[in-house]
Image (cartoon, rainbow, N blue to C red; front, side):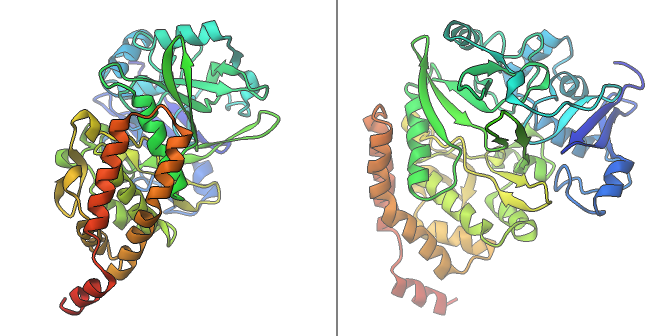
Length: 425
């Protein structure tokens, strides 16, 4: 640990905060005079949990923000060993990896010059053999971290961060060059996860739900799903605008290891409360669409870090596009990361329980019914369109989705029954 070392947090070209350590080596954060002069007090500049104030934020809320940017589990351990810091040293890890992380923050030593303008032109062009080697080495070099490639992204799954250059070629994001895409190989223990996730994401898109764009590819005979980052806006000349974002664990100051509701992570009702207090009017209905979509495909792993907020440069907040949607039930995992009207198994959620959950957020029952009914009515068409998009999806996944759809449609109350139920409340 370097005594007195400080890290600068840059956001949209402004040095907005400084991170240092408390007496026990834990990170703390304080906003800068530049931030206080540029933005009104109370602005949720870096996080809803860290509005702009003059006081220093203690380690608890600071760690929730920073650990939420870092990889989890074995990838965190491997990277920590590679860069020469302890895996529990949040300050040390973000010092090494913070030049390209989720959202728009650039975190680097405070004595360094301001980050250069972001551009994909600075990425080192890769040929097919180099990409194959990076994918093959993800266990020993998670995210592609090595030498001048210092990037960070939350999660435990193997993934590679790359930059798509203006000429269409892939590049390595050297020296803080922003990554633009996430490449996730098939998980060895769970067959055909690539087609599974791609199918579920395309199904959501065909249902009119905002999702991160995806495609599939093969590298060295290993299937991968390629996810375009929604927190990057790329211009034709290679210039990149980073869009700030935070997941809902960060927004409510919960550490990543508590992302599941049973471990103390945010509930759907808590997420809805945040949306109602801080975000656009349609965000709660978009959340209901997303939750219904996750039930439709039996995605039990939709936890607090799989829902996020985008912070636009003008300060407006909006629910981020849906991502990491996959049918987990086909692999025998029926548990729900966040409960729905206290139902804890994806295969047991019914439409009336979805309506109850939405009503607990303050959504009128008739409106919740309309949102769910519209999605279910369009699901057969969307399902067939997604099958055309992803012909390699396993029949077992489609079977699970159809079974979920049948149950949800069969348990959707009629308008008359809903009105009668409302009159008795």
